[in-house]
Amino acid sequence: MGIESKLEAVACTIYGARSVELSPLAKTQAERFERQGYGGLAVCIAKTPLSLSHDPKLLGSPRDFVLPVRELRLSAGAGFVYALAGDVTTMPGLPTRPALMDIDLDLETGAPVGLF
Image 1 (cartoon, rainbow, N blue to C red):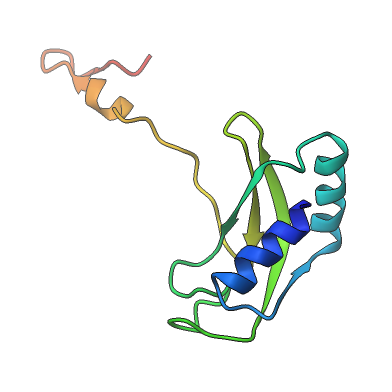
Image 2: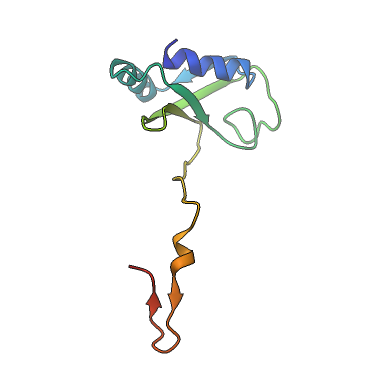
């Protein structure tokens, strides 16, 4: 099963979408990832947390919508391809211990300690 078919399966079976529409960029990326041997990886969809659709105004569990995928990104080391649906912004993974825990202020000099 190819990347586009997997996205369609998730969107239609789980999210209740009618179909998935890949942008020209996403289609090119899907073809490239498959040529490079990543077509067998799992897929994940990054979308709004407010709805099962891409649209935060379609609250709850809407049905019969088209899920627009604007871009695909490869996380080869983690073993998946993820789709960006609608106007969503991704964040990097954060460590379990934030660097903030190692930053302090030298009370005598007023200089920060632990930044570098």
